[in-house]
Length: 217
Image 1: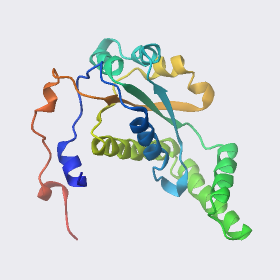
Image 2 (image 1 turned 45 degrees about the horizontal axis):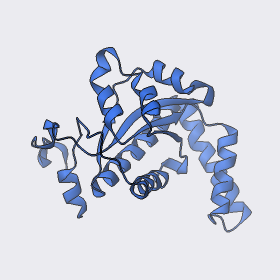
Image 3 (image 1 turned 120 degrees about the vertical axis):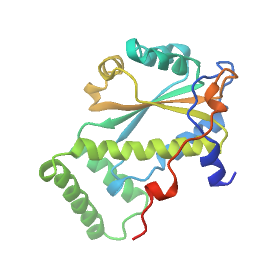
Image 4 (image 1 turned 90 degrees about the vertical axis):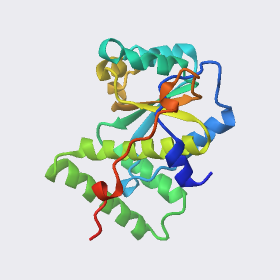
């Protein structure tokens, strides 16, 4: 499918057919797309929790009561639900693991280039942590790059998706013990196939016109 066709036809699914399950090979392909997501200085600050059994999806839906209750059926009826989490800090352990993975992948021709990468990356982290004091925002920005890549990939594979920001962060964090793992939940994503009852499937797409959002310098 042409990439523009994907952008024009994908939409945020409001209701899922609980009887339709994503084939394992197709789901694994989406996970690989997530794994390959680009990030600033290759920091990769995300961790993804996968819920595909009724019990696991129920754990996610616990965070969608009260004002968020309309989101719970999406989680429960979707084939798979993902919780995209962001690291709350960049630890030395994470940086060491990342540098070694880059080395194993053949990114460095010399030890000097390896150490230069480490120094440059630490410089960016210190910039956001100390000077700009918005390290958490910078890290979460990277996770939302992953979200965008996932949504487009799902559309290309004919899989419906819904990004969900409406959930109780504390309830979800407590349920998955995210704080203990140095994580916070950034966004929930449901994946599956739309129900015939999904009225959003036939609703026209509404986006601003070019002249409102683009300025050529």
